[in-house]
Amino acid sequence: MAQNRVADRMSLLHTESAFSIMARANALEAQGKSVVHLEIGQPDFKTPQNIIDAACKALNEGKTGYTPTAGIIPLREAIAEHCRAYKKVEADMENVVVVPGGKPIMFYTLLMLAQPGDEVIYPNPGFPIYESVIKFSGAKPVPMPLLEKNDFRVDLKQLERDINEKTRLIVINNPGNPTGGMLSREDILAVADMVRGKGIYIMSDEIYDRIVFEGQPLSIASLPGMKDHTIILDGFSKTFSMTGWRLGFGVMNKELADHMTMLMANSNSCAASMTQWAAIEALQGPQDPVRKMVAAFKERRDYLIEALNKIDGVHCVMPQGAFYAFPNISSFGLTSAEFASRLLEDGGVAAAGGTAFGDFGEGFIRLSYANSLENLKIAVERIAQFTRTFKA
Image (tube, rainbow, N blue to C red; front, side, top):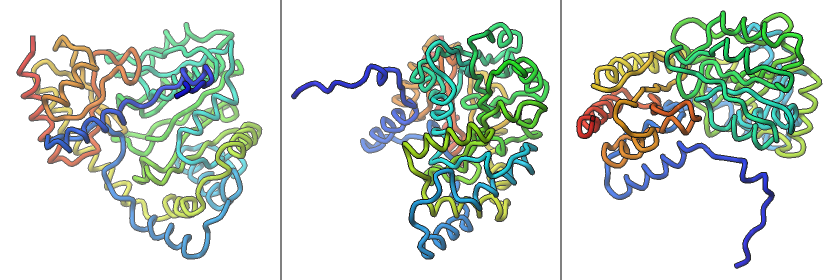
């Protein structure tokens, strides 16, 4: 068979290792091994019934065709209202672009703004697709180290040193994946001061901003002079347990929104009609399911972090948002990838190695507590037993 010839740029793209870990865990389960799944970042809650009912209603009403590329007007208006009420960002319908999932906002933002010769600063450890798409755009990825000693917040002095005339975009994720860390109000104000008036854009990934346990994140777009230089990335997957519905959105100035709509027209045409109608219900319907889910995550977080810190050789900073723990396992003499692999094979717990999220994740693993409290207790027992077998 002739070898396929693909463009060189395809070598610049990488995937999410959590899905590879899940595939391996599923294979082990098929062989009869018991596995606790803590590798995938998706809520274990059912999509609220009122949202499902709204989608079914839309289907039964024949709302199954193409929609405007940027999204249906009622949804864009509802998203703008949500931004004004929750994020304190002045937004109108024309600032909103609806896309199938959150990743297109990352992809389109980099395609719009970054090119060879530019530099893009991104969180590390952070969501792995940031670095992947930065490389694909031709720009140079510049890691923003998020260190345990700083509670996985931005080192503002280091960031200021890294910003230069080539800096085109800075990515922030608040709360963050994989650490669950949050930038303080002072952090956000300082970042804004560093870039204001310099023509540098911010992509603010706010996909977890309603899954927080103390306080509320500050959207950098709400600060004076920042709205027109910020692209907000958000969506419905995490807050409303709608990962499989594939619906996200971006909020940005109108000129960028027009460019992003053009990218949508050339790639996806539009997001699915029935999911858009369901999303209106998600935003405007009862919010009790969201509050109950967040309360459950907090209960799990509180148990898990306390339990992990009782394991000899493990240390874990208390996450403030999202549903991830990022424990330090460096004392065991294994790389993060080795630890995660052996924990799965020998311990029966599926976790992601820290370096799946960047070089600064070495010495850590990510555990998703989007699983039942009962299963988390089983996982902790297995982790404790596993670490006892080889600790140096």
